[in-house]
Length: 213
Ligand code: CDP
Image (cartoon, rainbow, N blue to C red; front, side, top):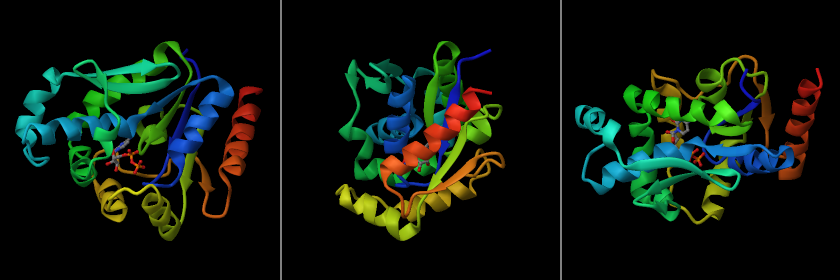
């Protein structure tokens, strides 16, 4: 049996990254940001002048894409040419294309294998769109973190990023392969009127009670 996998899904700018990181550190689990994995592929394609709609080219390139999905300390990282990608992943071109790239089934199955590998030997808190529904459908630890569209738009603007989150949400929820969805057995956490601490406490309590059963 694999170590525990905590699945945290939700729409853009719902606060799930911050919450997932804190939950991971509280339990001593590894934090995995799957959005960064999709973003890295979108960044690489953009850098090579490949449009997100050039599906055949993307499929061909995927197995040889020189990105490394690794770990530094207790968090996942994506490396290109030995360098950890950070600011590159939130460039406007990446925000614009990532949800189109993420709708390509071959991109999803390529990353799915890598995401599951992280949980072979260690407990993880994994954050994304399809973690509870597709990546770890059997985990009892599923949380769907959301907030009102106004709150989410304000949170993204406060980060100073150009990002059309409603466009991405629409793409993510309407794609046929692994769309953004609340798994039927996921606990819904609306963070609109909660502090980060309150959200973390709520999720941590649920995990603890399930771990002790
Ligand atoms: O930080 P934010 O919530 O805005 O986005 P993210 O988690 O970095 O994800 C960026 C994009 O990657 C999403 O809009 C999805 O298109 C895609 N994604 C996905 O399809 N499946 C995942 N498990 C994670 C991200």
